[in-house]
Image 1: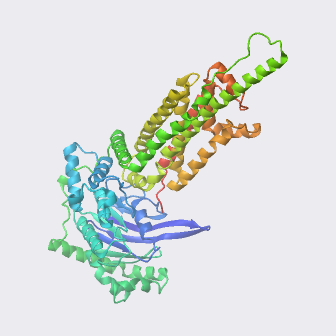
Image 2 (image 1 turned 30 degrees about the vertical axis):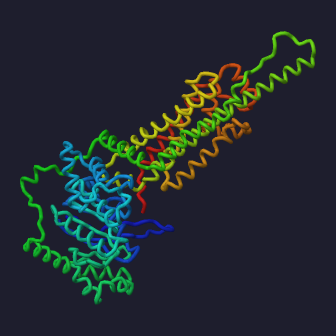
Image 3 (image 1 turned 180 degrees about the vertical axis):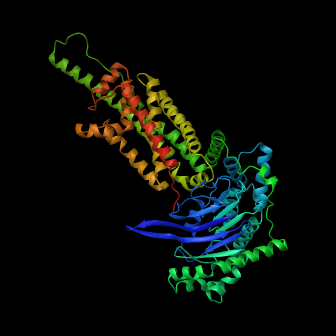
Length: 578
């Protein structure tokens, strides 16, 4: 049984406390199907989220099977299913693949046979067997709602919470979904609560909960609702609510509550006697069953997430094309300037020139060649570095923020943030390694790096990794993909002007900005790895001070660490949209 006792959820607005759920009390037995209705903004979704534990109750208590969830252990992920308004499946996957991934993330199965049985059962329960091989992106609205239900049913939840799962559907699809929810409530004593704006098909519910400004104004049989509100049709209930303050409706309900709860109990007893409601028998056999389904371990979830991420990546043709275009075009852009860095670097002759004019001319020639080669070498290195910064931003700016709603939903269902973040790091590390290696090797083939090439390659890898990690952290901290992308673009845009590679900054500004500019440390480390004469030529054309190799390595490593720490904080923080 689910029981609410004077449940409240209050927020602070303009310095004042505003109750969104105000002393809600009700009892919902096993095998019960209840609709939560009311005008827009009355607190329907807020109540559902408070029951689920997404909103911490401000006062009162929630009891589940006699357990006080406010004081004892909260719902186990396998006990509760929550179907939000948004889609919780990835468009490139099929129906079967979506359910399989949800099962692998939420339920620890003994073998592949048990996994297949669970998937087939859920497909059959939700009527999705015939379209199991169909991609999510081509499903209708009603089919997507069924898929959302199926992905919650994989763990056999005893409490199923549905938020507006019928909104936007045609009448036939709406009735099919309501009928499906009704049937689900009749299996194994499952409690199903459904928030809905629609007042159609109310006869399929066991009870109706009517909210007004966060207060319970009615909870009883659907056929008695019009009588209670003294209206002829259910469509007149909402206008009727507006005729009195919510406090008066709440006071009225407190007087009649016991009578209507008695009618609910009588209707339930009749359903059990007629055989239309079957509850699981309690006895010694039930004590042998585990209280909760075990959740998969870290490595099992990691393997599932990695497999799903690569599958989504390769099925997203636009993303694959973009990655290939970047991988091919960016190094090609750099090689257009490689010839300018190949020239020899002249030096002054050992013999002293007797003619002062010839000596001056020789010095000017040497200086010109040094400037030409030094500028080209420095520019090519910085070009590589900035392009890899851009690649890093493109790699991860939307990686977490772009799928935040699905991630938050899966986290609610038992997904470990550590497994999720680890899967992102491994996936992005593969991209970073391929991009950096290809950039370094390809450019080196057309214009050989005139120094320690392994060191140069290391700094290319580090700057790509640093920018990828920092943008991953931004993606984890931002609420939307648009915010994360915009901030990441700004971050890349400031890399070149603030690096000092093109034009040295004033010293008092440089001291402040330099520690944050990954491009500077990669450029400085690669320049320091050049051969002596080439290094001298580069130094002759730059005003910016070069840092030691170790300082560059440590700083870029620190940038990677900061980015991953931000990603860890962002992935663990609750960011479910209100």
